[in-house]
Image (cartoon, rainbow, N blue to C red):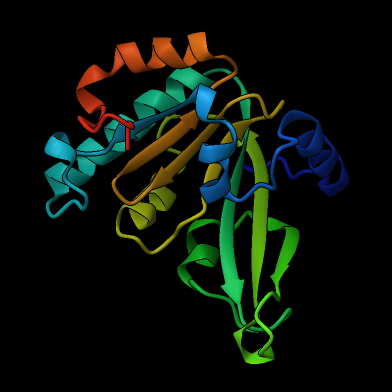
Length: 197
């Protein structure tokens, strides 16, 4: 059940809570690296699920962390689409199906290329809802299959961010200590790589 959202309030709150960057998932990890941790979705850092049992592991790991972050609160669910024209057809089309309650929040233009045919537009959609385990499983499955990307789940105060991607989730907490606590609860889900990637 979506509660809707106030675009202006959400934009103002984002600027206050995350001043070092826009709500583009791929930019947040670097901007807030002191509070960031990455969890892998499958054992042995396997990237893509191939069986229903593996999808169950992906969903369980994501929902476990989401529950730790957001139990008993409202969350914003943000999804992303792209187009080659400001109001042109958007990809991926599955975004509308799995995030039907998402309303357009903002659009970013990427017009750095001198050739207009290479300009792109990133559209962010949002809805606010009470957090409930399993409520975004459709979105998480599309992310696991690399159909959707740029998804963010955050509490109503925008204090914590969960960004699922195909292969895991980047989580940004309020402090390095909170990040360390989350990391210590799920050591089996961490990357063996020294950078945590």
